[in-house]
Image 1: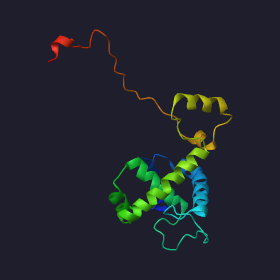
Image 2: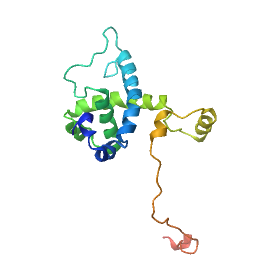
Image 3: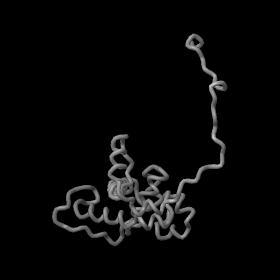
Image 4: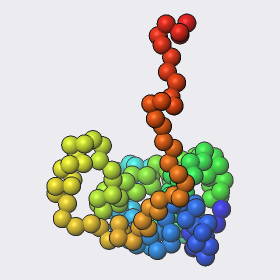
Length: 170
């Protein structure tokens, strides 16, 4: 698997891997980068509290840029490979893939929630969000609209369905 910087040259495969096109990815990247920076100021990559040493990205990091980190986690979420396969695609062992996944998932969640892009968990929360919403984040304006399929919907009438009586079931 090539990293983000090499993969963005092929937009069709980029969207198939991540679920975003290159423009959407580039718009969301600063929000993800800010969330990653905030996380690394407070904790280490394993989640331990950072006591005295500031975070410095090491020179031979398997995911050197924020774009590579975002690409890594989006591919993981969209494609749902096992950690062993995902690590192999990015040149990591399964244990290192696990470490990166567990560091990047909360970062992605934080970046999405800061943009108001996390779905509501129940109807009351959804209603409250709609009432409190004053503007949409810039990221939503760039997303493509869902295009309805030209396939005909399957219709079902009461007359065409077959229902068994309780007495017929053994």
